[in-house]
Amino acid sequence: MAVYEVWAPNAGSGVSVEVDGAPHELARCADRDGWWSGEAPAGDYAFRLDGGPPLPDPRSARQPFGPDGPSRPVDHAAFHWSQPVRRGRPLPGAVLYELHVGTFTTRGTFDAAAERLDHLVGLGVDFVELMPVCPFPGRHGWGYDGVSLWAVHEPYGGPDGLKRFVDAAHRKGLGVVLDVVHNHLGPSGNYLPAYGPYFTDRHHTPWGAAVNLDAPGSDEVRAYLIGSALAWLRDYRIDGLRLDAVHALADDRAIHFLEELSGEVQKLAVTTNRPLFLVAESDLNTPRTTAPREAGGQGLTAQWSDDFHHALHCALTGESQGYYRDFAREPLTAVARTLTRGFFHDGTWSSFRGRTHGRPFPTGEGHRLLGYLQTHDQIGNRALGDRLSTTLPTGRLACGAALVLTSPFTPMLFMGEEWGAATPWQYFTDHTDPHLADAVRQGRRREFAAHGWAAEAVPDPQEPATLLRSVLDWTEPRRTPHAELLDWYRTLIRLRRERPELADPDLGAVRTVTDEAAGWLVVHRGPYRIAVNLGPEEAALPLGAAGREVVAAFGPAVLDGAVVRVAPDAVAVVAVAV
Image (cartoon, rainbow, N blue to C red; front, side):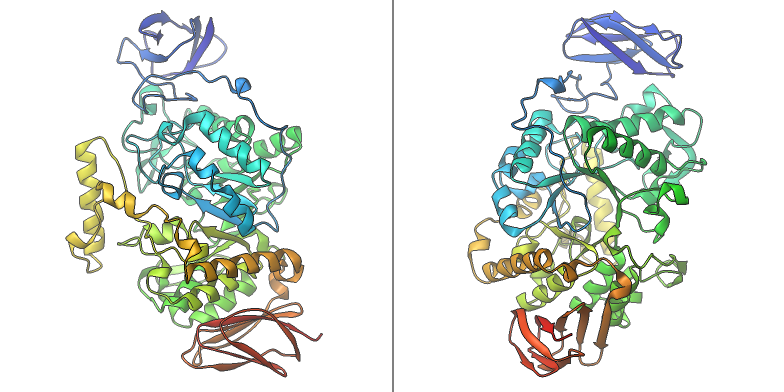
């Protein structure tokens, strides 16, 4: 016999569990408000509330028939791990690699992704960051429409597939970070409202009613989300979590949800003797996200830095639309500002928002910001899902890579970036509801029509070819110019590890010299200079001291005393006499 329990305060007359088609009544728990519990045979199961239709378990660890089908118990202790729990490494000093399971390989599974881990070991990264893996309707999608927050998408390989991937990564010395979504659930397959007040109209988000973090019933909702987070870290041995769009977590309680979550993760870290961590995606530009809880902060380990990305993107591409506008006025100066201050908007006017935005970031904590050249958002949310490699020469990509991988931030790469993948990464879906599928298709076309795109030019998210175009081509890394760029990424990551000054997180120790008109930037990192020429002509870039050697370069670069002569779209890492 197995014990079944569920929080269902909306149920009036009763709750039953249906196991392999046979109903079994549950009893109301006297000491747990809104909870129902009872024993029944083990098997595939679903709950019925007040005699209604069968519903999947909100805490289901497995949905073998998709999010609309019955749940299946998972005995996590039955999985055979090839080694003891790996203590792992902390986030500071690491390099991350963002990966989408469904498009990393043609098979699109955890097992297929695990077969490519040697590539990541050779690249030199420390953590693989998996995009969301919770179940969603259909086979293919980005994962941000997940609806079963304790389960694993079956087409990827289900719970055991994820464990096999983590086990394989740990054997090779790689940590695993998982992207989780707490700010909303997908529009199809979400049965939580039938059970209880998981959502509230007190706040509204881009997805509608907010997840209930502060209204009546929110204690249980918070416990549901925190329990899910801890399960990933405990049962799947995940090393850290990336929290999607935390600015959309509406919470007016005295102890914010993120503060409570980080406290519980810290307890688990102490219990298991593992350096577990949380990374937030946030557009608030506030150091409170990563400030210690004891100092009134939320206690997360790090947060994404879109400001650095936007400045770097403008410097490389010349784009100036939308939120790029403020960064595009003097893009190299904007890059320099983020490298030395963390946030570009740290209390400054944001024309995109129509108000001042942000506050200063602590100068000694650059590692608490993730720096990146490309991410799933910054590629896939473009009309054509075009990577920088679509329009930029390889030398310019190398310049961007150098600024990321010698920055005071925690660097993160997006899969395929390291060889300048020619494949796009587009917005693809596989909604089983035809009305929802059409709404998504038309909504995306309307969105980009406002920016001058013809409807027929915007890829149809439901079209299988949209997915197929987005799958990495693993023959590219062996071909020119991809192989040369890949070697450059490997070199930069090796230098970052071997020469600690290139990874120093002290923003206050970074010095920069820029010439917007000529198009060059020099970044001072202790006894090293990162000399980047984005201008149309060869330039003599000042080093501030006599140059000793060109440690590494992509493109022509020649030392000449206290300057280095760098060709257009080229970059050099130079050691100077100090």
